[in-house]
Image 1 (cartoon, helix red, strand yellow):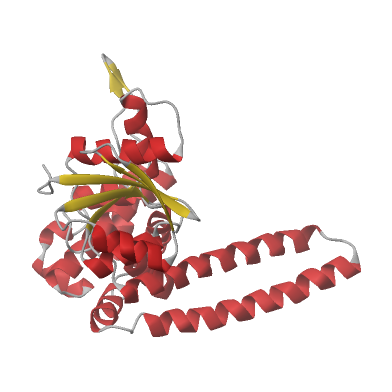
Image 2 (cartoon, rainbow, N blue to C red):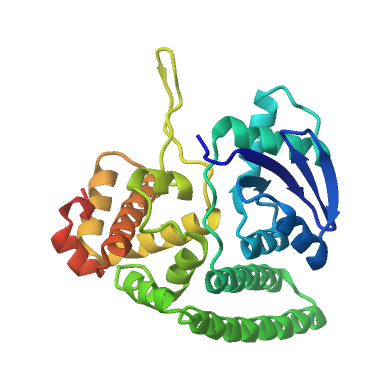
Length: 320
């Protein structure tokens, strides 16, 4: 159960937030200007827990205001909030309804406060997300170029590709600089890159989007990333275990790292071959390797050890 006596549900939108005080039932709408959010956060009692969804960045000004005033908050997955609403029979969806549902969710589930965002890590996350955008645009334009026959259209696409690739190079240099912005980020970046398959892109993705690395047990962190297989059994029927949910950016990065590591690291390669020999599809084997690699990386950060040192001192992190 949460130690906070009061729970405040907050639905964050672009131009305003709707709040619901569960104790009094009061619902308010507040503009998302810096001054209004600062006044709102300052007026909150210190034993309150604000509960809001991760809403594509609209919640960031609210988080900044709450962090500045030392107010605890829980940032929840929107899918979980919607499923909680359905489970309680609340099918309607408006800003005010969402605020009330979030307040009820916080009280019923005893949510723990989220760790305040580190400014250096937050900026790194913004830069890494922008790199993902640029890679997507480069891929899309490259595919269009392959289909374009008209010379003028081809020249237009080629010039845009040159620009996008230049911006990507500049952005990656800024990401490398930001990864050294703090002593902790720099140390973790160097340590992660001692593991097979973990290059600059994978390491910075983990630093940006998985701050729980090194502080969470292996099973919960596998669920957090979306690499844990979930049972689908009912009665006598045993369904296929599947992974779902989690953080797609981190999962994609670890899949890529595991694929590369399975070709170059002898022990991980042996694990892959063992799984395939046992009848597992190739992608299932790589997912299993990604989960194992996550366990190894988690132990490395927790114990402040590089990859080779980690395997010597922590037999449990070795591929099984």
